[in-house]
Length: 196
Image 1 (cartoon, helix red, strand yellow):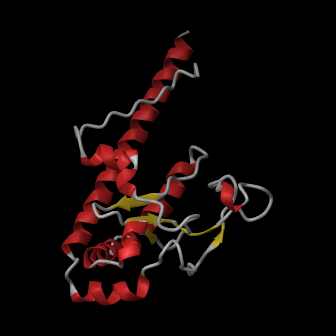
Image 2: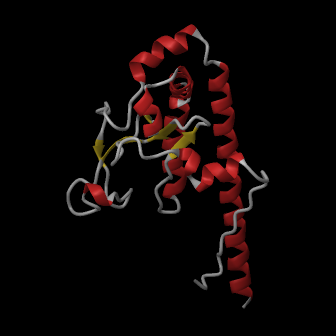
Image 3: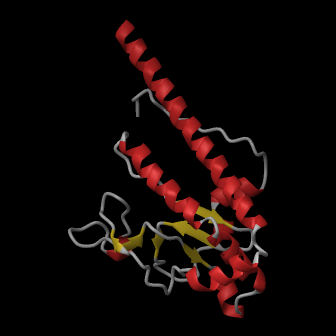
């Protein structure tokens, strides 16, 4: 019984460290997006923007590769059979734009958001590489790194093509609604009892 109590305490401590890691990484990403936002009017930002944004609907990503079924399963792309599950690029991000914006033409605010969030691309790539190393110890793949803007633009790394163009609007996702309204305290509960 004493061994079990010690093992449980070790697991609780490990969960605490994981949660602290996730919180720290989330705050760093927030700070990076805020830094990028501050650079949105910079002439260099605007000139780089026109050369380097990848649209999840129409772009061929520069370093795309087949994702393995254990990395992410996309049913519409074959869903984890022996062949290529889908293509993605871990070296760059892609943007997704809701169809409402596509139908009426891109407004300057969407373009500006695509430009300033592109400044976070290097950070997102490095974060994903570091996450792969961190989560390897737990034998899981890192989650995707993404940002949803107030105007509906969505930036995601690794870059991953959309199955249906224009139908993803982050503002309608529970994670976005929860973050943009209501209390800002976040509570994460992990059941480590093994009873499930």
